[in-house]
Amino acid sequence: MPVVHLQESIIHYEEHGPRDAPVILTLAPGGLESQARFWRVRATGEFRSFPDPRPILARGFRVIALDQRNAGQSVAPLDRPASWDDYADDHLGLLDSLGVDRFHLLGACIGGPFGFKLIERAADRVASFVVQATSGLDAHNRAVFDKSFWNWGEAVLARRAEVRRETLEAQRQQMFGGDFIFSVTREQVARATTPLLVLQGHDAPHPAAISEEIVALARNATLVRQWDGPDNAGTYASLLTDFFNAHAR
Image: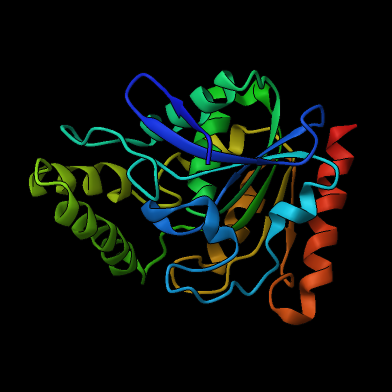
């Protein structure tokens, strides 16, 4: 994977498709362990229940995927708690280093919160956003996010002796201590004018109600309930390509 050295992070990324085509930044599932390869498989090696979108989209777009900071091959200091803005700095810094101004977004799982933070930070640069089974807090799943965070955090502590548990706990509270989709407020989603295609979540980390609430709040959003699973592989591919093609004209 190529690498970019940003102000405080080293980000490994990959590119697919024509370099002169419209750009789609893809933000993979996997919580803070999000890596480019997780578009195809889970951390366990099990295949995803939807097709890998990278080769599908690379037929007509320049597709960029990355390992998030301190996941996969990407690294950043952990002498202070990281924030959603730090991740957004990585995403925008990567695009800047590649000479990309305007771009589309595909974000799954934690890619939902990442993507909405990018809209908050740089709405004029985001042409459209597919929000795929976004992470979000409901009345029952707080423990899911605590467990996911510490699955990542314990692995960090095991391989990096300089990192303090107290720093990671402060990061957990800073990033996941809030509600809704964590990175932005409901008011910020309501102000967004970016075209959204929301592929509804359907399990504990990705509640259906959160996808529905985003569509109810946002000014320009469409909800799709049935898109996942082997019977919908063709539907999933068409949803992505049709949406991005419509907003790339």
